[in-house]
Amino acid sequence: MTVKITDIKMPKGANRKTKRRGRGSGSGHGKTSCRGRKGALKRSGRTTRPGFEGGQMPLIRRIPKRGFNALFKNGYQVINIEQLNRFDDNSVVGPVEFKRAGLIGSQIGPVKVLGTGVPSKKLTVRAHKYSESAKKALEAAGSKLEYLVK
Image (tube, rainbow, N blue to C red):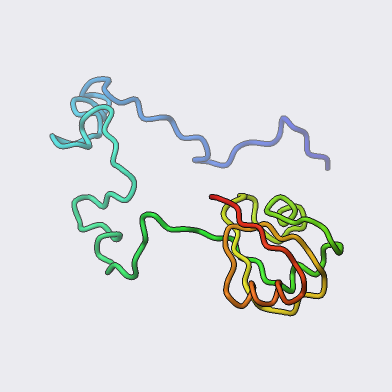
C-alpha cells in the first residue's frame, strides 16, 4: 500500500490556536490580557537590562573582585631575539615586517624586543623598546638598533 500526501495528517494537538488576548471576558484572556495586575510586567515596552535578576543581587556584584586593571596600560607586543633569525642578513626589520612574518598580532602597536635566544644575523632592528639583555646581544652581533616613537 502506498501513502499519498492526502493521507498524511497532523498528529492531534500539533497545531494549537493562538491566544487572542484582550478580546473580552468571554474569551478567557480579557481585561488584563494574561499580564496580571500592576508592575513592570504589565506595562507596554517593558524591558530588563542584561544581567537583571529581578531585584536579586546580580551575579556580577555577588562575585568578589580580583586583581587590578590599569587604565593606561602600555600593551607591548613582544618579540624575542631568536625570532629575528628568520629575516635576511643586513635587512631592516620593524613592526610592519614583524606583522607580515606573523610575529606580532593584527594590531600594530608598540613593539618590545626581549633577549631570549642568540642572534645569528646582522640586522637593523626598529622597535619602540629593548630589554637590556636584548641590547647587549644585538650590539654584540653587530646589529643596529633604531628607536621608534609611539
